[in-house]
Length: 558
Image 1 (cartoon, rainbow, N blue to C red):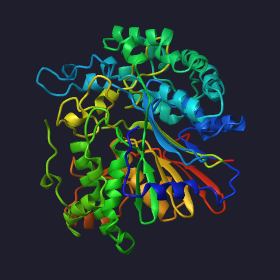
Image 2 (cartoon, helix red, strand yellow):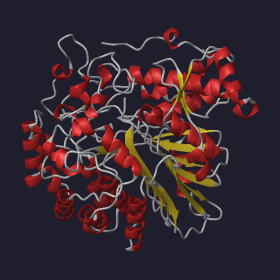
Image 3 (cartoon, one colour):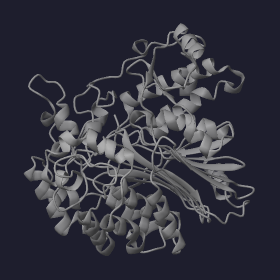
Image 4 (cartoon, rainbow, N blue to C red):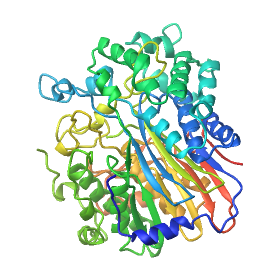
């Protein structure tokens, strides 16, 4: 297992985390997820003697049923775990991989431009799924219950059905044009060729059967045998290039999380192939040189934006799959490097992105799902999983009951050209057989002297900055309910603009930021679906909250 650490001493980390739950007499668990049925599934499994890791399997698999536009068996995820019994913390990397037959030529049109249809829709956009392998790994290595118990809620809901919320129906209608291209997709998601309306009951008996096979056979129930053959035959018939070896060869990776300190707080986050942890560490290291509490909001936002700008520039330049590329991680995480970047920030003027060193040419899906869990024993799970864009590739292989991802767009398919979310990249993030695309997923733990938080969100390239702002809120003493409700802003180096949710800034703040040289764009749509759980280490009191931007999110403590 590759070891990646930030700027804190390993001994201090273990002491802090090992004692994190010792003081409080917690008797409750907290779960926050994007759907009440998923949160309830987690508690159902805990009620049967499971721990946070069993609950994670239940929550994740249920989300694959009730929120297929965001995640599912056809996608992948990154799962950050902390085991209370021995202080072990690890990132389970279940990110999707490129098939062996990947060819960049398939994603370029006759003029040499990116062929966006091939990269985000249909069989060529789908990478080899890692979700199932990740859930089986977590159950077998960290859980207490058999898979048949942890998967039971998802199997039951897939078979019996549920009534989708307004978000599900709206986003399904948005993808109807692609979904209707594929018979398996149209049969599962459309009603007489039309997008369904409120009151429709969604059932997926094929998905229930796939989950039952996984419950009985583990990883082999998905990556070998009947399900694997069905997937490969279906993808190839639709024009894709998967093979049985692609599926049978898929492996979960355990990776050392990124860890760093900020003003007495210890933060644990995702390692590559996620860019989240490194970008967060770089931003916090830059901002650690300022006394932000003494600044007015405009200057504080200015400095946060400048830190975001520099971290996203480095993301484009350096980061990729750690199994395939060498990255200067030690330098990117160092306090000295951050000090150098800080020295380039003017206290009152924006730095145009084109004045920074250009990244060398030789994003992430907005429809992702995050859940946070703390159990009574003090085990922690921050799980972020995705199919990339809304309903992924739009392709459902008949007989499987779930949509495949479109994660191939997260690779730098055309070097130097941005992906669907405006994120550029270079050869570090090139698609290679078996490689994993760079991600912005940032499941994180925040550990302090008095409180512990589990935080994460979907939101494409905005995930990292939303988690940054959420962690700041937690450090400042905000409750999970406050954190998930806060308006958000974002900068990602290119395009050179601060994007913001409606109401994030007052008119006067906008004028002051523009006077500094910043460009602002207000979004009509809300971002993300943050889910946060916290625990007071002294009292054991646990709180959970789900983003009010969603229709069916649920944060429950019991």
